[in-house]
Length: 158
Image 1 (tube, rainbow, N blue to C red):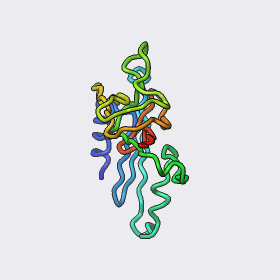
Image 2 (image 1 turned 90 degrees about the horizontal axis):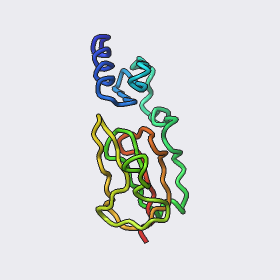
Image 3 (image 1 turned 180 degrees about the horizontal axis):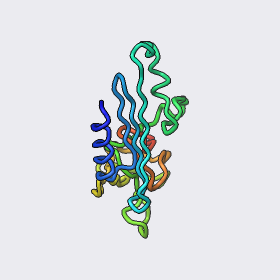
Image 4 (image 1 turned 90 degrees about the vertical axis):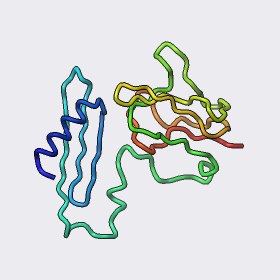
């Protein structure tokens, strides 16, 4: 990937409204973070990874990111169903700031119930439950960025 491709990627991310985008290939790792439109700040990290320095058996350090939850799943948490984010965007627990949250811890949910909203590129997407049960834990703070497949809720199906 050359510098012009990286610059066009930065411009695309800034226009899209995404707050963070990560791109990894075999030889390059890019993280682009954009602040609110009013601040005009952009942070881009580009790391060139030499091919000979990459051992085949070392994917674990790459997978460990500061944003990811700890891989320690207790036996108690393994009985719960994890509802994950289907898209990248900003997580909101409420339909608007003056309304109550869609679901609270302890609430019973059924398939089709709206759990949260994720804003992606100025579009608000209702995230509906595909399972029934009771919400045990909300794993994401309100108004925070989420990534694809990031855990959002723990649900007790019993």
